[in-house]
Image (cartoon, rainbow, N blue to C red):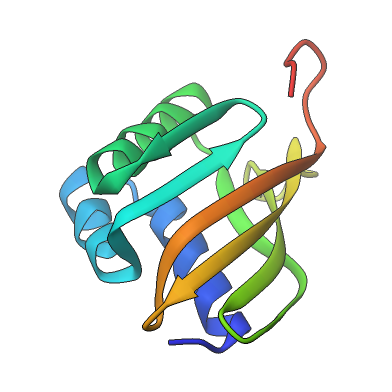
Length: 123
């Protein structure tokens, strides 16, 4: 899977999966075992670390859903896409842009940047 749209959508599906076991299976399918994730608020690695980080964000923002924003693009093994997080029907409370590096069609690294964060959160 190297098509930027498919990578971005699969990535967002991981974040929107509420069940821990189902999310872990999606992480294992999409991310390499040695994958890393970094943004202004956290750094983590491996399937367990990435799963725990996503679970913590979901716990901190219950009822929120992630969506791809705009048009994902990329070249070679790099993908860039923007995303938003909002309660269904509401304006986004967080927006960001992530850069993913792929190896053999799986994510090996994501570097994220925030474009909009709630007041009171240092990003």
